[in-house]
Image (cartoon, rainbow, N blue to C red; front, side, top):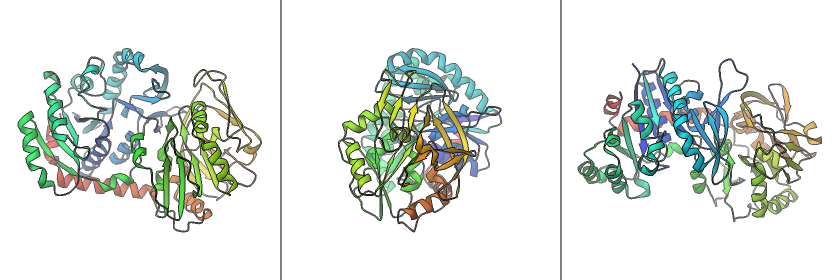
Length: 489
């Protein structure tokens, strides 16, 4: 029989994703067949999972792609059956078992959760087949009792699937004793009984200094402690999912190569930049609204967007269009990925209202192309090849839209043998629909050399694997892993 254990947090961004990935690697190292599962995720950083027998793949949260890597298994749409991709402050695209199922406003979505639970439980049943252990990641906090009656992400799932819960508290943000004890206080008794214990994450310094804190939490709650996890520096080497990390990625450093990335309001798949961030001598600066694009940047990358037309308006409202034009006049390079590629063109049209009521918007005019947004979404893993550097690449496509125009006669790469993207006559501005381009070591090395940085091009994927191994070693050392596995049922 498949056993399962669920990690829920006292709040968002307590480190559940990394802990689940690390525990998945621990279980794999112990010879178990392990799978990750997240009933509901909210993120515009999506990955593609192949669907057997279908030309198109399905979308899952990037975190579950990483966790599948930690397990040593291919990602599956059933690892994240419900994915919400925010398009506005009050609405999101709803992806169910990898396929787009329309859009929902926040208030309306609450009424759909009951029907989505059927998809969650169907995926849960499918994922258990052949697995010794499933490690489940919650979302947000079980203490959001105002949402409990329609919850599918935390205790709503845990009670229905009878999965024991370990509560994760983040000591780095402060107030962790109150956070854990407060969660115990306000949980209904049936939910409280699901909790097998707790662990503390992100501790800096001498772990023994929190012994009294552990005693206090156990005294208030009656829950056992599974241990204290130190600050995991290796987590910075893993692909990013939550946009919360961008608030901490604003840098003032000045190494050999500065890459500026505007923080669009609906930024998507910004983990495309992670391989560049991992390079010595490269400073990837995520520029928040209200700040200009840095004048000393060698490269500006306009990332993906879940709402291209709205983010074009936001780009101009911040004056980034003027900054980008000045960057171009100085001879700087510009790369657009997916939505960013669309923004670099002359115009973006939305005749079907895919993104909203605005049916047309002027682009930034740096590429002689135009984009028409279409209802059918392209979702697939692909093989690619750089035409500029003659290097093999791989990645994935997730986009709505078709881009045409004169500059597409100068494609930057091929995707499954078909030309993709466009470039300016001088080659200093280009765009592509390929996500994951910078993850190709040979391409990244040649690209950075073209920017004047001769030291780039390490093995990025191996760096991720090494980081997962190191995190697993830390968890083996600092958590009572035997007790955690024994708690699973």
